[in-house]
Amino acid sequence: MKNNHIPTFKENVDAFVLKASKALKLSDDLIDHIRTTHSVLQVNVGIKIKNKIENFTGWRAVHSEHRLPSKGGIRYSADVNQDETEALAALMTYKCAVVDIPFGGSKGSLKIDPKKYSEQELKSITHIYAEKLIKKGFLSPAINVPAPDVGTGEREMVWIMDAYKNLFPNDINYLACVTGKPIAYGGIRGRAQATGRGVEESIREYLRHEQLYKRTKLNPNLSKNTIVIQGFGKVGKSLAEELFTRDHAKIIAIGEYNGYLYNEKGIDIALLLKHFDKTKNFKNFKGAKFIEKPADVLTIACDILIPAAMESVINRANVNEIKTKLIVEAANGPVTYNADEILHKKGIDVLPDIYVNSGGVVVSYFEWVKNITHVRFGRLQRRYEENKMNELIQVIEDATGRSIPEKYKNNVIHGAQEIDLVNSGLEDVMRETFKEILKNMKNLKKVSLRTAAYAIALNKLKQYHKDMGVSNAH
Ligand code: NAD
Image 1 (cartoon, protein in one colour):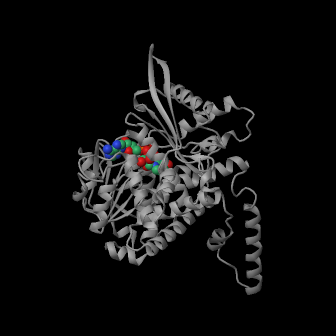
Image 2: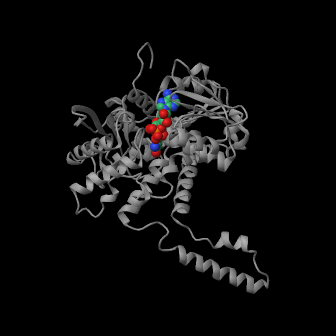
Image 3: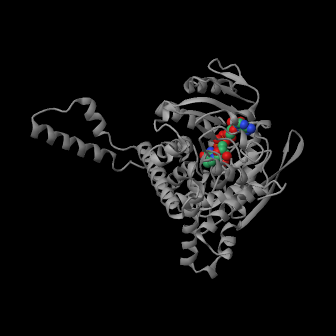
């Protein structure tokens, strides 16, 4: 993309797709079909608030329905628009294909600043928005399943589920109409942390491969690299916590919308979480310096830079100021196409969003499966496994005449609970997908990690169309 035109979010996603399509030599008609949004619903949510009618525009875009349900979050923000919603829906298609989750791609959005409304007002607004999507066939356990995104969370997901249940009380699978719910409403353990933990797994996996960390001069020991994160919302917070507690990572800066915290020795994330949960603000945190220049967090010199807030933040205007070795796209679309080209030429690796932040949809898939099977993972086999391990230990002790110390016994005997299985499934997906990306990088020669990831997705979508018969494309 050239000249003065600033590409839209959807144009950026399309440019990445076209690049991978060229590397794979896919035909123009097939790729045009794959990258086109299949349907978009626009709704108006009109509601009387404090004696005045307010109108909120909302969208639900279905990028693909080659597999059902189509899956994708709902975003509440004053800045959303149709192009952004379509771009995010498209990313969901490629993301699900890369990590082999059997869903199509979708996304929803509502043009609203949620901070300006009370909980009761947001509940009513969400109910109306959800009802409109449901009545038009854009929300149901079988066809289209939302999840949280920017500005929404577990609370909104329960309200959406409630709206669906009210309209279809006979649907035994009503819990599966939305994911990212609290545990009491059919949610799954580990979903709230899943996106952050998946991002962490992607960094761990990168650092397991010598040809990658040597090329970018990163230390294979995660804790020896300096890290900067932009965004301390659902994804940024859980990511920072996982990196801090599990990897002892040195996070030197974290950005929010009003500024960033900086401590060259590393920020104590446990203390920051306590402070932030209480004050909802970085200001007055004793463990780091607060600098009121939010955009500058991206240009701090560091080993690993993790944008975890919003799209297009690394672009033509600031790409040459970026001083890092690896960018890890926890947010959707944080690096524009033009910036990505420049970073690739400079030898800065970018771990792409469609792989990096897929932990959310991976664990959403587990939640959806739990909801339609109506049984918690681990419920049937946990005691059985524990009893068998007990027996095995008994056999070993009898045969050797020695007893195994209690501390080892407890670890070995412990049968898998839901959280163990969720985290194991997530780790497996992140590690296996990374290997696939590397295989594609090797086969396609000199392509970026992103192009290799898109190549996986496009090859799967191509196969789907071949099996279906292209003439049946819909
Ligand atoms: P969120 O609303 O919980 O958090 C976003 C955070 O970014 C907020 O704390 C906000 O104050 C902050 N922010 C806004 N503007 C900023 C700026 N200019 N500089 C720094 N911080 C800023 O949203 P989230 O769910 O954490 O999503 C973040 C990103 O991750 C989005 O791109 C989203 O699409 C993507 N994502 C989220 C999930 C998920 O499971 N929630 C899954 C995959 C991808």
